[in-house]
Image (cartoon, rainbow, N blue to C red; front, top):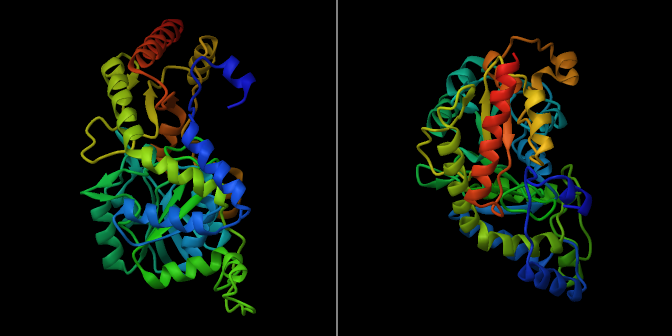
Length: 390
């Protein structure tokens, strides 16, 4: 985070700490003279696979590339439909358009669970449906078993957008390995960050091989292989992309992965402190209080009462140096999706209401419970002020 931003925000929405071990790993990589995808990336892939409990992992340029490669490798194309949430970052939906398919949005479970509803998924399936994309909102696992049952019964693929969920678990298994393909993001605000970067995970060898080829123009080998004399010429049998990651990102990822569980435990303590301070407060409701699974606690969201002006609350909190955000605007109501697919206001009532009332508070491991109590106190004060003015 730059100096100006640090001066503006007493408590930014997210923040990262990169220490001596990250510096050492990056410096070692720079001195190696090899910066594109190579041995460090292979080591990161292997470590991430072990962390997930096995399977195949392919490091890519970012989480969006992971989603695109997932759908493309599954053969989703023009004429197909993909059921997915609208309460997500737009990249989840854009990846569907990249392969020429139709994005069919399903509503969330409710105001206490922002994950996609299995019942809503089933209601949106047609003869054209090829895949289901779930997004583990805020790091809280979706109810995967009913979704997997639907997919098996209807012969559909399942892609997990686990950008928020590295380390989260559903029924004892890491998020990202329940469906056919899992997709991770290592953007600068994520629990595991490399600045940019992402990972594709799958238990299927043939899918992994296809993703690995498509990551690099459809080639069967990388520049690292050519450098070692393993490849003198090549042939392209399918369309590929330039979605490789760098050795520097992988070096950061290896260090960050070692700290992921510890930092997620810290996030959990901070979330529990927020819940204690804000649960039961007038004009505030806190989702995921009855979470049964092991979350990664990427976001801390609250819902403001309909009578509260969210913009005023966010502006007032800014005066105290508290940065807030909205996760997320309803993707189906963006102009692109309204114009291309004819979505209208009212199509997904729960998603739309959450988009109007949700507010995200600062959450990152550099905070302590004292910080959280102070932030929560200011939130209570500001919301009380705004409520009295209505």
